[in-house]
Image (cartoon, rainbow, N blue to C red; front, top):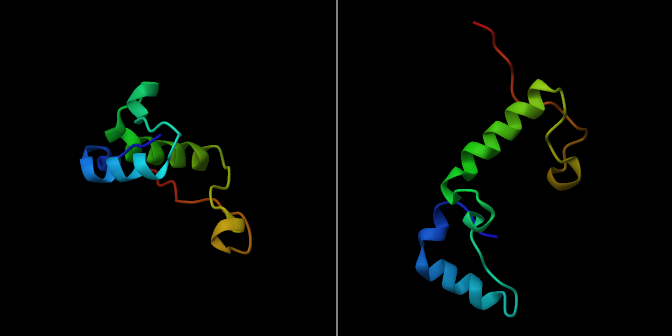
Length: 76
């Protein structure tokens, strides 16, 4: 499933499709999610994790020493 601005790049999509062989390449639109909404959805997810006090970093991937809450909530 491809999403983001790259889905409008015909050359990129053709190369991905070719590299996937027998697997199907679709955009997130096939699941009802606008490909251009990827960044907004990602930031909404990060905000939700922060509000719920759920660590959002991935120590096994990033090498961080421990899970941590990302971002900061500032009240006006």
